[in-house]
Image 1 (tube, rainbow, N blue to C red):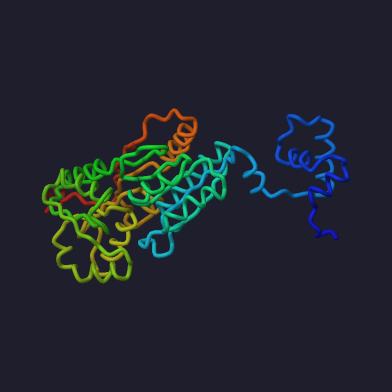
Image 2 (cartoon, one colour):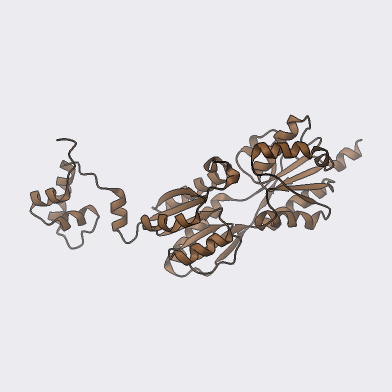
Length: 339
């Protein structure tokens, strides 16, 4: 009988109280219950080793304290979304900030935007953080969800009960271009898997500093991308520097260059974007544009609270980025001086 489930009705009958009283004690609603009764109920709950459903407790409360974090399971992650270093760093930062608020994080990955309202409703969430969806998805969600939510890099005009937090993508490109130009680079190629939204802003920033910079659209799938690089190798070798729109693509590109006998930065310089942890330990350590995941996570939680309380006025926030100089970019000017 040890495995037999303890029922609230049995506990209530043994104590001579209503099931509502036992349930209220379990869920912390004890304002209208005497201290003596609360003590008796709690004592019996402990004796019977009653383990309530945490989901039931949270859903029974008006304030569930659950923050949903939903990430687009995009094809570019090739089934390894949570292994992507930018995604994992973002989730890690959010987890810490949400815990500090005394709240709970629930994580979901899906490439179907219409699963998100059901997920939010099922768990009575008080707010959500959404990462990686496109503008049209956010517009549909805004129409279907009434809870507050924060968007990472939504690239949209924010209206309604949501906030869009992005980094200064254009300035990141500007800083990359300015840095490359200061080291004598003029033949610069930007690599990206698309030519829209934030990646295009990064390219535009680069081009504002280096007018001759070009954009190359690369395949998302890794094996196909490697073949693409091989097919375009002679064209790639015409450039002295590459600006990749993510550290993932930057480090993947460096691995390709090494596989065909080219050295970084001696033959080609490379800059990434994000400053994931691997950048510093990579060989060579990667010069990149840093975005602060902790700053964005803290702001996301803060603005969810503001949205919930109805006094959030800044619905579009752009955070600064910073160039981190490491060893993947050479100084062409210096090489020419000593040639």
